[in-house]
Amino acid sequence: MNEKYLKSALIFILITICIDSIGVGIIIPSFPSLISETAHVPMNESAMYFGWVMGIYAFMQFLFSPLIGNLSDRFGRRPILLISVFGMGLDFLVMYFAPDLFWLVLGRAISGIFGASFTTAAAYISDVSTPETTARNFGLIGAAFGIGFVIGPAIGGLLADFGSRAPFLVASIFSLLNFLFGFFVLKESLPKDQRRKFELKRSNPFGAFKQMARFKELKYLFVVTFLVMLANLAIHNTWNYFTMEKFLWSKKDVGYSLAFVGVCFGVVQGGLSGYFTRILGEKKTAFIGLITVIVVMVGISLVPYGWMLYLVMLPYSFSGIIDPAIRTIVSAGTPQNEQGELQGVFTSIMSLAEIIGPPFFMWIYSTSRHEAPNDWWGFGAPFLVASIIAAVAMFYLWWALRNFKGLQKVNEVESTNTPINED
Image (cartoon, rainbow, N blue to C red; front, side, top):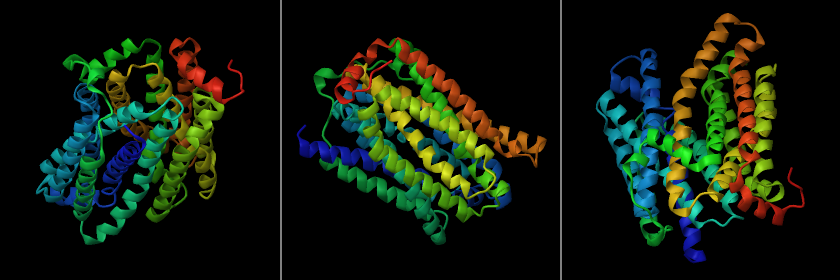
């Protein structure tokens, strides 16, 4: 793959991730109204359906990510990516025309299946990256997702004036145009002689977790990924309630804060994650990211004034360097024809966290608010729990890297790029 096609392919991958993220974010402002409309209930009664409809997306991603990853190892990245992007576009149309709640839930379920394109996109990135560029390119994936999640809610808010269904139509158009772009520019990244036989037992989420044992020392890094994702969900799921109840923020204030976080994450993952790994190496970068998460979570729970959250959110964006660093370490010790399966395991782990996290942290928040409605920890309990989870993740990271022989390749890269001595 020459440099011209490589650049076009990377652009397509990043656009795909961005559009997937936009597709999630674009529907947020109008989704409650659409649920109310399709469930034929008043807005105040639609909340009982909201978590169910939103949760089905993560659940289906959890189920199908290993299958998508294994199919890409067998048939190549290109056809699986194009099918996923095309299917996502058609699915948004299904939700646009959904006559009742059943079709809306079905649409979200199918979105979760095709949303597993992240698995194949990550495998593609691994295929075309060198050891020196892997962390940077994985960081670009995170940046694309963050940018999409900033753009999505903004577009969704503007389109809400045209009706609750308009955002779905626009998301469909985005996906279908991206399919056409990829059809003409995307080249295959996995040579036929490096593909492997498809095995169903390695293609279900529970089988995927069993396959974690095959990666030997890497299995603890999967635990780290799960715990980091779970800890971050404390912010993702309680932020609205926390800021509105403690600091009396409006919905617009919440939107501005999330946009600020998204921009910061995009800058860090897109421009600084590669820099950190070049200077410090993947191991030190991951540890710094986890320390940042711990400090920030405690800080959020303690801040007395709302404007201080912006000061805390700025360093929080540096937690975005964790995932690219860990993926680089794991990818370095995994054969190319297993990268799809590997990224499928990653996606399933993250989806599992997204299934568990929302009810877990909302339960903690509701309970603590009931027990201590006027105390600081009544508001901050979810973030304190998240800091403990991040601390456990840091222990597992230390444990995993202590005797990880697969890091030899990564360490060689580190030694050529930094004079800092390893422990």
